[in-house]
Amino acid sequence: MKMANKWGHLFTKRSSLRQPSAIRALMPYLSRPGTISLGGGMPNSSTFPIAGIKIELKDGSQVSVANVDQALQYSGSNGISQFVEYLDELQRTVHKHPHAEEQSILVSTGSQDALTKTFDLFLDQGDSLLLEEFTYSGSLAYLAPMDLNLVSVKTDSGGILPSSLDSIMKNWSTAGLGKKKPRILYTIPTGSNPTGISIDLQRRKDLYAVAKKHDLLILEDDPYYYLQFGEKRQPSLYSMDTDDRVIRFDSFSKVLSSGLRLGFVTGPKQVVDQLNLHMQSTSLHTSGVSQSVALALCESWKEKNNGEWVQGFEKHLVTVVDFYRKQRSLMSDCLDRHLAGLCEWKLPDAGMFVWVKMPDGFSTAAFAKMLVEVEGVLVVAGQNFSPSGEDIPYIRLSFSTASKESMDEALSRFANMFNEVYINQ
Image (cartoon, rainbow, N blue to C red; front, side, top):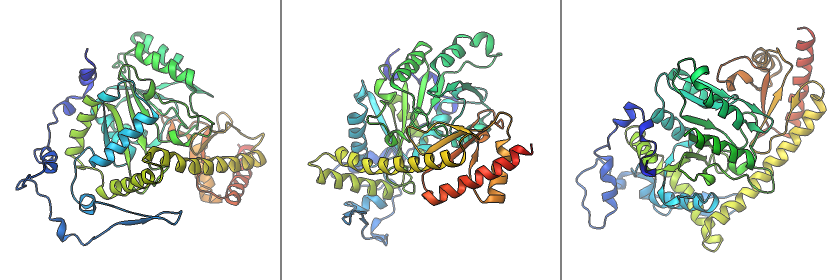
């Protein structure tokens, strides 16, 4: 099977029937010199009240959106071309995909937008989907009404277990109970939400090998990739994708602004082109203003770093990672002070969450509800991250926004209520 047509057989019937939007298909022609448009229903930008967009940065400098008309007007569904070029440079520099020339990028309204469109592309009622036994609640919320068979892959303190994935696939004929065999693995390999775990290099290689052995497509949801606390980042699964089986989801929400709602998906051209058709018939394209603000920032970093915008981005990331590393340290101190001997946890090596293990049989759903209602402390119960929806004995704590004093007070209240509830159980 040729690489270019590797995954088309997994598209759902509805996705396969999508055709290019007649109007959207005209967009590329608008950039041709001399083209006179009497076609698409684009409003005249001279009627827009916004004359310029200028952003003040925290270092005191300012950047301006160079092409305001472009920012305010309809644009191509895959993203503003100059911005997509910057993203392509980022992927080639950071991940160095073995077949970079055969990959495409689609800008999305946050990575969640691209992720849900990809679920729709590949999954239909009754299909099976492989995913970690603790996974992102936002994905589970979207998947819940799709009537899928969610297949949990075991994890340990090092993350997802390739051996568990291999066992599930090898024994499917007897253990699958007549359900469709899964063809897709959804995973959060770095700073996993909710566990905070990043799988190490060897396990990433092993996971990829198992996926290759069983011909699985990997959805690599990696919003915390740039929030790794180690001296050197773990490589992405995308970077070791020798046979084009990884679709990668990136987000700027954690490192630029969550309000910009900017993410992007990178993967085999055939897959991304099909996602583009979905974009054409839904939101048309991601906000041009958001893309243009990010583009202006990229151009500013390029100017300040001798034409190397990625270098400027990396300098910014140093300050972001340092902030979250310090927040993690503050949370660690508070956990040791208030919960030592009561609960178990492992400090994350990326991201912004701590996954706390409570005693077996303890209802964290009830406890989390009582904690916020009585003590005013908000945590998230483990069942929200369980594909089965079980009331599992885990709680997710976030250290992203709370001050040292707030963390300390919150965990003091947490400990007091836990002692009261657990003793009286």
